[in-house]
Length: 284
Ligand SMILES: Cc1cc2nc3c(=O)[nH]c(=O)nc-3n(C[C@H](O)[C@H](O)[C@H](O)COP(=O)(O)OP(=O)(O)OC[C@H]3O[C@@H](n4cnc5c(N)ncnc54)[C@H](O)[C@@H]3O)c2cc1C
Image (tube, rainbow, N blue to C red):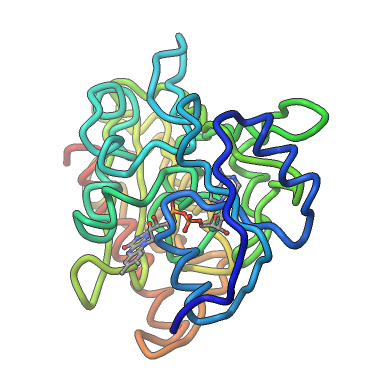
């Protein structure tokens, strides 16, 4: 299908984009890589009067070292994130999740910020962002504010970004030296996971000192497996040490039932994938 007619704006600064958002309000929609928005427009699930393309705003692209964190510009394509040495060294979990996100073509068009702003609970980036304690830098007419990952995902396809705001960057605290693993369970390659687990683990003398685990597609938003995280601390990084904690992975989750699997099946998957991901991240 062909989208409903809309006006197209391509500002070259964030300030211009914000002014356009302010002027058109509810009638406007931000365009990043278009890999989620364009299908929505083509199916006429949304028909904005104005589309504001962020593609010409150079300041929204790139990855930089910011001391104890790396900063990923919202318009940085998945393919750039995938091959960036800073991401691989300091946020290996994101590197591993992006490697398996969609296919090469989509990774070249889709953006890091666009995927997180889209907030699909089956999207691959929410769980690593939660596990790494990412901070979302959001700019609006009143200036810039930072939202912690735990407060960013509000509901199905809903985030803390206001209607008059733009996600400009994501700050990812460095987890240099932590082990990591992204376990993605799919029926069809290059697609969204039925369930996925993002785990990053700090091991000291064979014992798990800290574990952070994000869950994909286990509720209306990406989630933390907090019961497992707490139970893992102090455990030996062995099959026996991890098993009981992994069994708690689905605690507090409410996964959907659909053609790919029932809710109970997803809960079972979460426990299996958390066990695998933690053991792999811990190098066991
Ligand atoms: C066939 C196919 C397979 C896919 N498989 C996967 C997969 O396996 N895993 C996965 O995670 N994803 C998958 N995707 C989605 C892909 O990751 C998209 O890149 C992503 O969902 C959206 O990013 P985008 O840059 O294209 O954003 P767009 O589609 O341009 O925008 C998405 C939404 O976010 C809003 N938005 C975008 N940027 C901003 C911003 N800076 N500030 C505020 N709002 C913003 C837009 O208004 C829109 O509502 C797939 C897509 C397709 C088409």
